[in-house]
Image 1 (cartoon, rainbow over the protein chains, first blue to last red):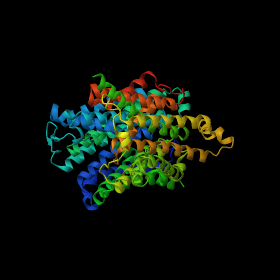
Image 2 (cartoon, rainbow over the protein chains, first blue to last red):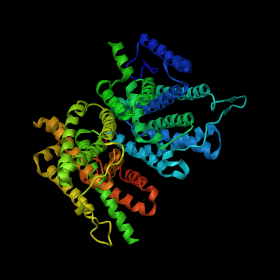
Image 3 (cartoon, rainbow over the protein chains, first blue to last red):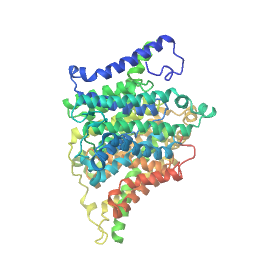
Image 4 (cartoon, chains in turn orange, red):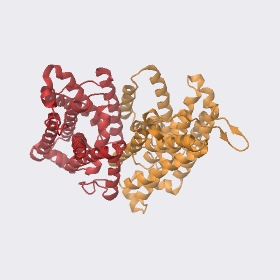
Length: 331
Length: 289
């Protein structure tokens, strides 16, 4: 089911499954490329399609660490939010340039992840999760308290995304929703391709080895701590890209983009879609974003709804959509 | 100036006592069951709101006794129904579940008691300042410190002197052996969870009297509690207590000199501790993995 035939089970796939994998990947891309054109027919809108792609990227970035390295970070909203604030603040204060904004946002978040990842790489399991939760809050409080620069609780307004200057042409991502969607999708595609490439490389294989059996991986000479640290930074890097796009999508960013509940959302997306498969988190993100859009328009008790949803997914649906399909298929 | 610093140190000590009370409950559950109870803040709020509803019938003292017990009973039921099925699975799942539960508890509190903050009356005998010079030393604050100290003392008494406590401690270091020796691990975990939730409920009643009561009261206290556990040392309850008090005092002192860093300073402390001593101040070696 995934783009990485061997990655999930660790067993060589037979030619039939390989074919099915390719067909599935093809289908995913087909749906993504055509999304703005059928979104309206199913009751959505183009902005919602962009949100699916962006949240999908964030969830897949988290899953690089969670699903393919086996390390639970519950604080990825920090890097997502740093990417978002990096873009917003660069466009507002420095220079009205979308690529420069993304660059700054991603760089800041990656440096933060490298420092924090270095501090916590020796921790495992629940303790790793707890430290990442706690560290995630630092940036929340900084943006919350530093009103003069970040806009505090009200968020950072007074800036808009600017058209993309490509030299030969201008892409109107600021006024045309579809143009922005394809801009986001192009970045999504590049990120996903790089992640898939890394996971197929010997380095990616050693990450999966760490997930499956850390002690054995260590005996094989894999520098486990260093690999987990690198995986953490890569994962945060892509989460920051998603965060930057998220700020551009909304023309706005507020501290909720890097609060703990956002981190929880990423984890539930990954679990819901199936964290052992490459595309699972994207599917989880699509379901989550659609539900969020629908439910928050119907009721004020979004929190009860999403909380119950978390509980039900954990109790009855822990393998996620793709995990379930895969299990059916192998029977 | 001295008075201002004293005031804030004392304030920090009180806030730190809350963190410690919360963090001790979290630590108990984490150490024995490997569950990060994200809903701990939700239980704290629940305890506070139950006390608020009991006030007209039982008065403050009755509510102080009954509310934490009722909260603990709810905790026992929640553990039995929702959390027990998740033992032995990836810790990710219990974390996600309690995370969802935290949402539900907060929303339930909002639906029943309203989104606005409600006044929580403490007896007048406790609110008058004890001295004009040290105006911040109201009876309620002193009473709180004493009560938190008593609760912590009681907890350590239970852990060190009773059969249940010894089993909890033994289970924390090797649950399988404890199980082999004929202890019912399911009940042990259940009671341990209830004990942790009791502490959260008690902290809730006390916090409501000091900070006022609104549905988000738990969320604002749970993050520092995580920090308290990490600073104090994973797996060590005295460490958790020390961590809670330390970060409380640190943020109290920071309020004097650099108010906007009040929250951030505890995370800086956590970073420093992790850098110099990754297992925390009093943490056991080898707990991290």
